[in-house]
Image 1 (cartoon, rainbow, N blue to C red):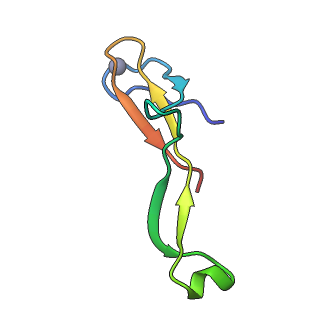
Image 2 (tube, protein in one colour):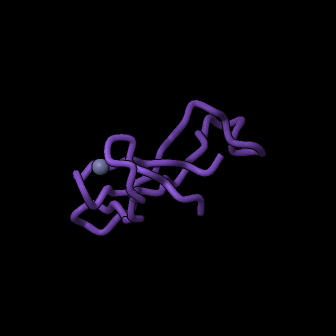
Length: 66
Ligand SMILES: [Zn+2]
């Protein structure tokens, strides 16, 4: 994992996990069609973002592996 820095504070952001109150992890659904058979059926690619929190100001950012 690359180190993420807060754009406001310049400190290293801490990795966190975002979940709903039901315990489900959040996914990012893009407009990119998924490869393979399911793609032809209209399935969209799902990406799992990594969440980072700034310990100084509380800024939350999410990144997906690209
Ligand atoms: Zn900050």
